[in-house]
Length: 327
Image (tube, rainbow, N blue to C red; front, side):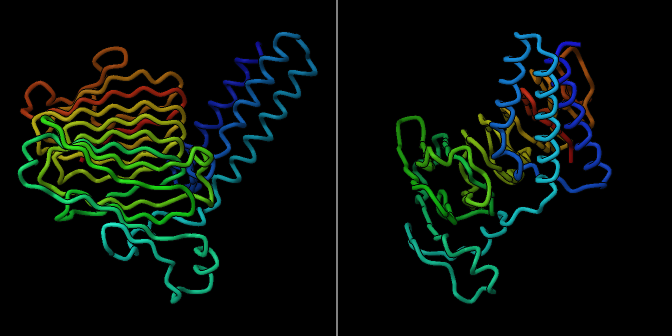
């Protein structure tokens, strides 16, 4: 058996085994804990290329040994609860358009020890009724960030940030056809780091506009419940990420595009909307509950042709876990 096929087989067995144990409640696996170790895959594939060319039996054994040790470490690391999570976003203080302050001193000792390097930042852009006829585009970029949608606001957008590193900005540009918001983190060094040094961002959005949300994320996670928002387009491009996105049925058509490297993607769509999924998922795992397979890479709900409201989902991933369910 060729070494590359053996390595891919072991990796797929590992991912499938973890997902199976997690689905049956045997273990709790936190994928966010292992994203920052993705360069380990480059080392493994580098050894594979090196020893495959030499046809060295000893080299093959070394590659497999490194792979087994690496996956064992990831299995252990993935079961450790994260030391911080996005719940922090619910405890931010409201302030002016831009407000930076130290953390409260009345937390318990453990929280104080953990939060001393963090600061709070509040960014907003006002809602202008005369601009609401235009489409509203929200561009989000950064890495090492946990994003959460935390309800509505009378402003156009409100972003509460709990940050350890990086510079954050929220800009607004109005053209004849669109209002474009750009939320950005400038920190190339930590773009792919999603460990103890991550940042948390809580968005509040106005429900009046038609939203186009475009995300580019190095490593991180996003938990967005758009059920009560008019989302025309949601586009995600990223590497090691965890996505949990819920859509509503307030518009006739919603387009969802996800392009990922190594990601855990969960998408929820309403049952009264017809939905079609197109996939180019390589070695990714797929679970499309409530969908019928129409052809290779194409899945539809039974009410796709008859429903007045439709959601189109395009999934493109190398080594990811894709789940689409109906509610």
